Length: 152
Image 1 (tube, rainbow, N blue to C red):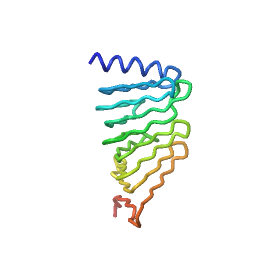
Image 2: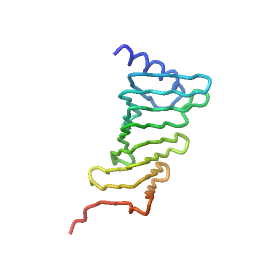
Image 3: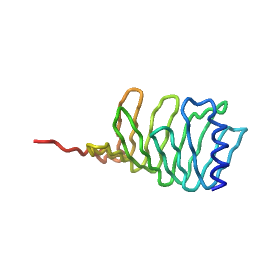
Image 4: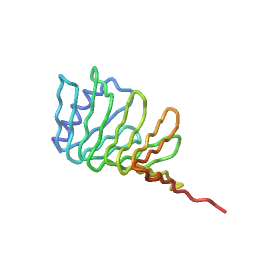
């Protein structure tokens, strides 16, 4: 528990200028101030408002102590809220680009919308929060998959 508090205090310093509070928890934390890169491993959890990201490894790239990009790997799962809808998802790799406000899920990408249970599956899914757009890609000529229910 003490280690989590230390990590949290370090991360608060990194994100001090952020408009919204970010909480980061992990079993291990490494910071390279020269390259402005943080590597967190072991039961990683990032909370920003209602959004939650979980993984076993997270790399945070920064510039002037401001986060630019998060890359989560090893059992990456997330829950995000957009326009009063909640989305759960997972993939082999999850990338959040802070300035573009985009999420990219790579490898076994999956998103489920609540409460409608609409599902998206593909090799890569890109969610643009600013423009409210979704793009699903497939490789090796495999189809992307979109599952939804229709009331008749």
